[in-house]
Length: 504
Image (cartoon, rainbow, N blue to C red; front, side, top):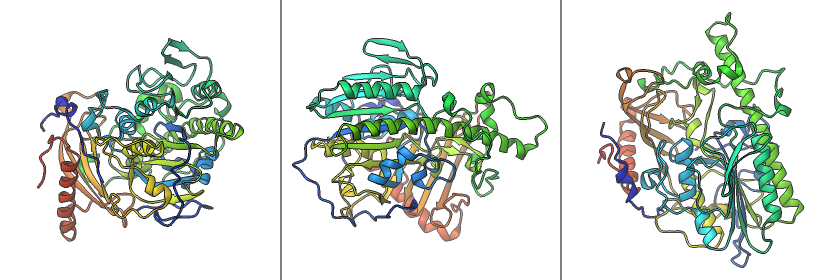
């Protein structure tokens, strides 16, 4: 496999580019294009509150129909705004996804791939808003260095940071705060809201560490679910028989959790058999995960309450999203990186009174690169020509959008933890993935790293859990050919470097 030369990424620009629905109980399902809500150009520039969580999966959010978790305050945003059911990331790792959210561009354009930080000559939507007179603040996780651009005020975690007594970095230096991370950053956010200049619009980015490993909850939720078993996912014991050999080396399994979490959870009882051990690990994992999510949700409610109490709701855009999806035991896995649905799909909710219809649902294919152009558009600003995402305004208003995307491109570069490098195309019905190159195994010598070069094809309509690879199926060869052509078209359109040769 040819190495991806990072220098190729830094001098590239891009042209602007032109399912699976989940209806939650009590919410109307609105096909995009069915609403006649009007966008008033006379509105004052809106305030923006952007909640961004870490690794918070769709199945752990109750407004998405979760069977395992309750998130009443996140649900408040959905109940009064618009819920997207098909929102996807460009690369399912924290830093690349956050770069895509901030810049509206793929990582191969900005250099923000894998563990690499992006080239800061690529401007972010906070920078544009700040230059247009917005007051801007970032509290919580940044994960792209120690000096975020575009923010008048920031208090950020160094790297991933910690849950208890977090250290935060501001323009004044580093300071350790007593308390729980979600509580601390919310306290700082509320203090900033109280001190801001009332006559100017503001952007507040509140980016929580939750629900990232090691899933350490505050004391008040330490015993949540202690005396009950959380429902297991349907394929906790998946043998992956219907997939290719690309999945056989994955380190990020339920059993693999012990490499990182044993010091916190302790070891499973020695008398347990293999299946019971996996069940024990799943219960430890999912309960701690839900506990951290519950604390985060509680703090989201504090901010929503503030907006309501201070008359800010009507002219404030509120967004809730995660940086990517996450496996919650499905197929025996945790973590992300894969192009499979659990990892690729992320929650995305937006509320803007007068624009979004309360409780509406949209199943159009949207991406994290769409967030930046959307927010600039809603703020009445031009969308930079080099942003690759598209404004979601037509979808927010419920207008017909016949030229909206019908396919998307994904690429994961690092090939670590037994998860191969991969790229592919997803349409409304099908997904084609190419796994290629060396797959790095955790704590294993490089001589033991396997090489893979395989393809997978899934029919998401008939196989939503992606358990039967159809790539070699004679009946699907026309589909394979069409998807490879679409994959090549997307790569050309997105100016994606030829780390792997184009197919057509």
